Amino acid sequence: MDMSVFKEVLDETARYAVRYLDGLPERPVTTSATLSQLRDSLGGPLPEQPQDPAAVIAALTAAAEPGVLPSSSGRFFGFVIGGGTPAALAADWLTSVWDQNAGLYVLGPAAMVAEEVAGGWLADLLALPPDVSVGYVTGAQMANASGLAIGLHHVLEKAGWDLAKDGLWGAPRVRVLAGRARHGTVDRALRLLGAGTGLIVEVDADAEGRMRPDALRAELERGGGPAIVCAQLGNVNSGALDPIGEICDLAREHGAWVHVDGAFGLWAAASPRLRPLVAGVEKADSWATDAHKWLNVPYDSGLIFCAHPAAHRATMGARAGYLMHGAADERDALDYNPEHSRRARGFAVYAALRALGREGVADLVDRCCALATRFAAKLSAADGVEVLGEVVLNQVLVRFGDDDAHTRAVIDRLQRDGTCWMSGTTWDGRAAMRISVSNWMTTADDVDRSAEAILHHHARREP
Ligand SMILES: *Cc1c(COP(=O)(O)O)cnc(C)c1O
Image (cartoon, rainbow, N blue to C red):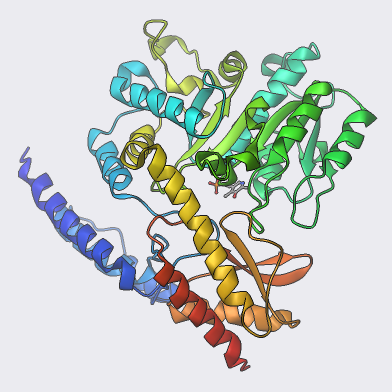
């Protein structure tokens, strides 16, 4: 085997990567290729003969780049999307170089320990109990599925039912009390678990999407068997955080499990200024969050934490005979996440945290929130632009007059214009633009240029 082939293709790839990243700040935040152009440029028959790796990469970059949305740009404000900090991106490359199977300690000792260490750092940063168990998953979707699975296991065990063995058929009915403005991944998690969305008891929320504790109390007092409360930190539209301390206290009084969907909002805990917003979060039972959003780790990277490590292992653990579990103090990641074999996702999380440090993470969170407030101030000063509700975190909701079609047209023109990229939503039954400031590179100048572009398209009012 001629190992110089790696040098050639990786040198070429690194040169390309640096060029792409160097150009990112001025790159139009849009794509230039159509669907059919991409099918043409990437398509064609499967090659019959082996191809030179460097030529494959050159062809791939040329064909793909017009269809690569620069979502790691500092002027990308759609959905809730992070970029990749230099250390996290580099560690993500190394993850592929080392190519560990991060399921078992024997297969990747350093990967296991990096995950263990980063898990402890995260518990500290995110105001969780110090002894939480942690699982590295693809994102908050799987973290929500994991937390709800552990919660179901735990509350049914307390009701005398062995979920692992007997499943949900014939089990006591569990109620999942979730806010009206919950994320769709909660419903999807219950579908995936075979529990069904019929278990959801919808708890009323206020105008900003925060679960109302009085409504939760009323539902809990109605009684009716084992219960899981699914709280949310960070509504995808408004950024609102449920009053988590109060929710946990109510749930404890009634013996309910609390799962927190904190995909991005849990990161408020990392900022001393914002930490009061999540006061009491340590009293919950399981927590889902993302590293690929606010921590700016490349995709994919989510985390599930649990205050009951034994329940976590009982739900997720894999104990097939051939797996060669080692010494008792070695941590096998497959006991904490639903995957069997998987990528050593923890290296990038570890590197991201180590490079930023506690102050760097706090600064990242505070900066994004300050820039969201700057956005709101610039936009609300203009005629016919309404910022909906208050900016509590990094999310801004904007409406352009009473005509939903105009609001949608502004979003549509922006997405094609390339100055910046925003996505739309429905809020209170009406169209709105969402702005999410989640990227470590975003500057005040990015916000000003973007606000200018938004106001330009708002003023254009053409069909
Ligand atoms: C983004 C998000 C999710 C889903 O996270 P993925 O990383 O896309 O799986 C779930 N809940 C909330 C509140 C979110 O913002």
